[in-house]
Length: 193
Image 1 (cartoon, rainbow, N blue to C red):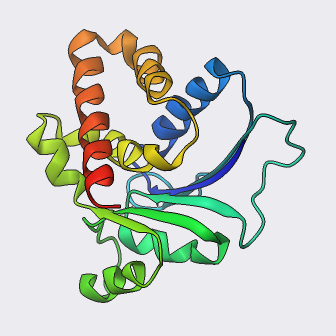
Image 2 (image 1 turned 90 degrees about the horizontal axis):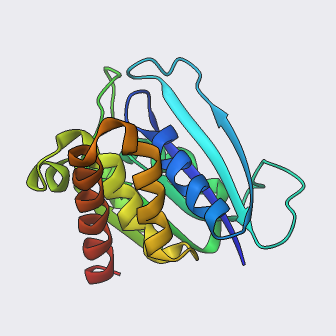
């Protein structure tokens, strides 16, 4: 088993929470993991990315080579395009369709999503809308993780357990809202593969 994931977005969108949940699930599944992250000017609007490498064999580098990522999981649509050179031919782009417009010349959303849809394997989901529907607008990152989960070779129950462990200090209500968001994202992906 090997799964190389590029997590992309902008500051404040929960990229590092996604990485923490997946990391916890990987450890519980006795997998090796390496993670590298770049925060940059991540305070509410700057680019954030994380490489997450999971394997049942030792991993010697935390960086993902170009053309080798199994998944680009992006919580911001334009950021998904930035990392397309990392995607393998069989890889999936899983992106939110809600833009975080933080620059004056942000491209037209239709053009950005058109580029995503050119990829042979893609899931484009309005994670913000789904998160609001489950009752937690801040859980769009967990919707995105759920949408990527069918393509990650970790039992879904362990990803759910990762949420429980990462968010338990915030209380049962927050844990349950994040679990609902995760499940809603997975349901969408399974229906739209």
